[in-house]
Length: 233
Image (cartoon, rainbow, N blue to C red; front, side, top):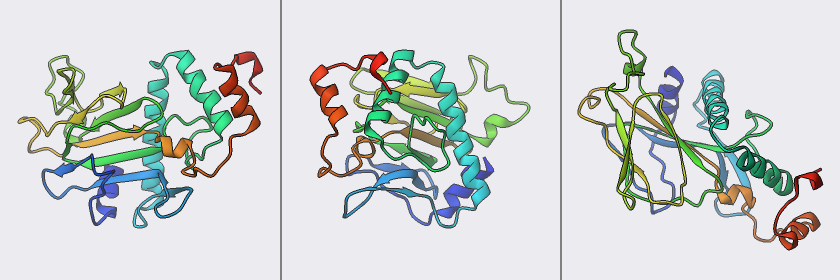
């Protein structure tokens, strides 16, 4: 939690991710994106972290991302994990310097006491959202109770679904469906809640450079229509 607060304080302004996504703050918290980003004004990929964020806080945020990835791998179907491993091998896209050797997600969005409008994302794979709150870590608070207080709802408006989120819950979802995070519930309106989103943008996979030619192996895979595992490597 200390590192999430440090991340929030390290940025002096709220970022935006495309015009279709409008982050709304319930206070002075920031909406920040870190990790891999498509370069602006030119081709290529950059890795971005706030200059004022101390190294040990950056390491803690990286540790959080790794822990989320390891937890998510236990629920993502094995053939889908294999598919992204093969895609990574073929595409050779850039990965975060501090990440694992087989990263699932390249970027993190963090908003303190934020909610978003309904939107879709041009992401390459599943996205993951989770929430964090110091209140949920209190020793006299059992956030694992089935009837524990909800801090936010993650909604899919076109499907008429709302998923209750408690601090520490993680939700894997298809970002091609309209989705959004709600404002804090009445119970949590006096407690800070960080909403964290992990994602892999298609621009990262494509290296943000339309001039790059396809490799011979990529062309072969397109012709085959499917990659046979025995041909990998």
